[in-house]
Length: 250
Image (cartoon, rainbow, N blue to C red; front, side, top):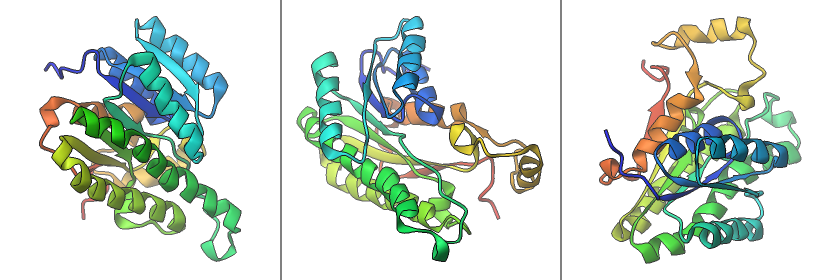
């Protein structure tokens, strides 16, 4: 199936690792031009080199999504380099600590909110004028099953992702008249640098909660992100798509 994405332009935050990196790779396979934004300079260079080796039209930029000015500069670079922006994928994010909330210092949980929620807001705000003017575009946010149903011990992380889900719905209503769709994906547990703490014993235990007896891979999520950016999905907006191997079925 042709997704008709060739020569579109995407910004992928958190694009040098995990779901973001795989999304950038899948975009390149579809002929999309990609700006990879991340806070890890070494990983940016490595990812850009890899994607250029696939004949991708790619550039990288250091970008901290919690810094509104830096986000604006990130978007400006995409426009100056590629001429426009068609897609924004908000993949920059951090996991939540397992320490009880009542004992957690504010600096620990404030960082989760700042990156996962405020960072997503900053990036959406920066691209909205461009997409409105184009009268087309896609915004893809990364939520989490924790944001859908809550998660014991991950209260602030769940709250940050629940906020992303509400943001997604609200922006979909605001931008729909401009032919801009806004959707989110909500992965359950996915193997990625964010989940590197997982032990074989813990994985075996968690597998009992999944109808499909494996945990997720970044490609499982990236493929849906790319698909939702295509014109094949032009009438889907304001939705949060669970990607969880059957985890949420009761």
